[in-house]
Length: 399
Ligand SMILES: *Cc1c(COP(=O)(O)O)cnc(C)c1O
Picture 1 (tube, rainbow, N blue to C red):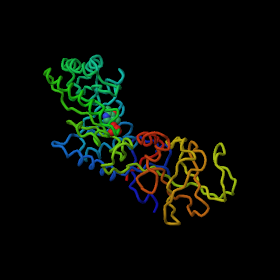
Picture 2: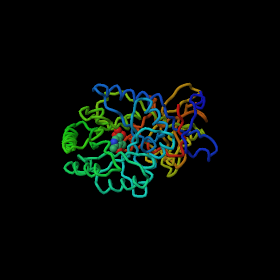
Picture 3: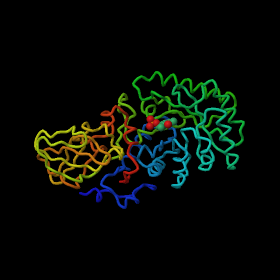
């Protein structure tokens, strides 16, 4: 079955493909049924507390490479109430796609972004009175009020005020008529680790700060802290709202946590063989001639390279899943030699019947093939980076 026949093709807005004139064999198929499955798993898990916390789904970085507007729509249908982005442009993109839900801005904006931040009705994190005043004056110029979330640094060391300064910053927000305090938040650096004690300590400090804000007569709004790691491993952190990211896309944040939730990878990075040849023993393959055939074998060329987000460090290390149409079965084949910018080769073995246009899977949900976790382990990184790498040149296809 040709993949074009098996999936309903629709492409994300703003992609490069019209300029290339056509679809490509190489694509990232986004399995929306797996996305829904993961969101439902999370909702069921969160329903263990009553009331269950609300869900703010991270769609930053083009939804970890999956397509932000498409993921946002499904997330909202499956019960998410908020969306999270890292930059003002990412938030504006959601608004341009017609998405009306509250959008939290997890990063801090530069001065020249503040008018657009207000214009796109984003809800920024803030951590000090200076930035609060900058946002408030942009709000005044645009003629709107802005809902903000006070970020308290309990150990991440990225953005956030010190716990002992939380009341003062909350007071500064309360004193600015253009701002309303919609929430108070923190973020965990090791919630995905086996040892829960740093997260327990952080959450205790966070709760104290929230209590102090209340004691000062300021309503904290929505209280939230948990990322995927804390959602999975530390239910005491759930509060009013949780902020899942990687788990929505079907991966655990680390390999240290017990796999209590069944998650399904959403992205399938696939291509089709563009060329097959037989080579003799001793033939070398790709730049640097690092691969030398030990016997007569069949070598296939795959039209994917590091410019598509398939890391060059996978050269000679990774395997792909070959869907051999003539043989009617799938099997793995190793990368032969170096990954080039736009292509790489695999060694099919001497008896393979795989031919041009047969599908290959670089990573995805098929248990027979690699997933992003297998790829990230080969590279010493995390699954987040593997799906984020998939570049704009790769059409996203929603199935
Ligand atoms: C990205 C992000 C999240 C989601 O984290 P995951 O580990 O992907 O679940 C939550 N909160 C903040 C502030 C983030 O930047």
